[in-house]
Amino acid sequence: MTREIRYSEAILEATDQCMEQDPRVYVIGLGVTDPKGIFGTTLGLEAKYGAKRVMDMPASENAMTGVAIGSTLVGLHPIITHQRVDFALLTLDQIINNASKWHYMFGASGGVPLVIRLIIGRGWGQGPQHSQSIQALFGHIPGLKVIMPATPHDAKGLFVAAVEDDNPVIFFEHRWLHNIHGPVPEELYREPIGRARVMKEGKDVTIVATSHMVLESTHASEALARDGIEAEVVDVRTIKPLDTACILGSVEKNRAPDCRR
Image 1 (cartoon, one colour):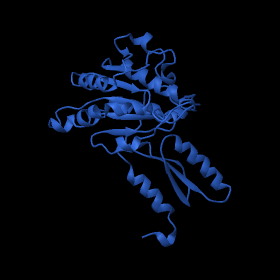
Image 2 (cartoon, one colour):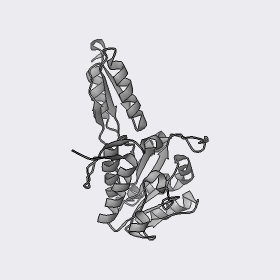
Image 3 (cartoon, helix red, strand yellow):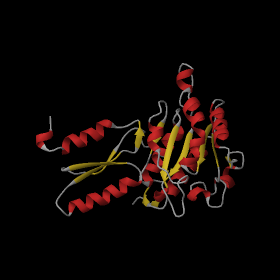
Image 4 (cartoon, one colour):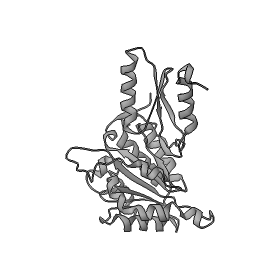
């Protein structure tokens, strides 16, 4: 039987294994060395890999994202964490005008292997500057890959794929997912970026969702099943690139006969 661990533990394990196999990978972010370790996703990394590979940073999001981007140009593979997506609004110049464009501006001579972790969703006492879910903004930027895993298994597999990618990847985590449990292999593995997953098959209607809403959609499908409606739940997993073939295939299958071409 596959062991079950928390979503936060899956991210921590993926980070640990990536750092272990590749000395170019380092972690930087506000609070990554904090005793709480950003919802437990960075616990113990500083003790294991040292302060030169696991670094706290000042509240200068734009400047530090620029430092991380610059480090990729000399061969490093940074993982930078902004504890709220709202904080990343200060970094849009670096992300949009530098990270996403570098590969194309210089004739595909190199990439920016950068992972930016952004946390979305509200929590107790969170104000409007700390609780937005504005992933669609990043999904419209050419040159970025945008990931939103809903399960611990996909959190680990997609995180590893993101770290090993030569492009800048935005990795969204909903704060309500960090404590959910699920089966996760112990070994290093990868999930393909840009491929959706059918979480639950159905023949009557298609529900397409991302991140935490995948769980809510699964609950909705169970409620519909009590009324005899079989809903198919598609977990998008990555909103850029978007797996339109999987989504449209499910919709086409479940459309009413008089609506089909």
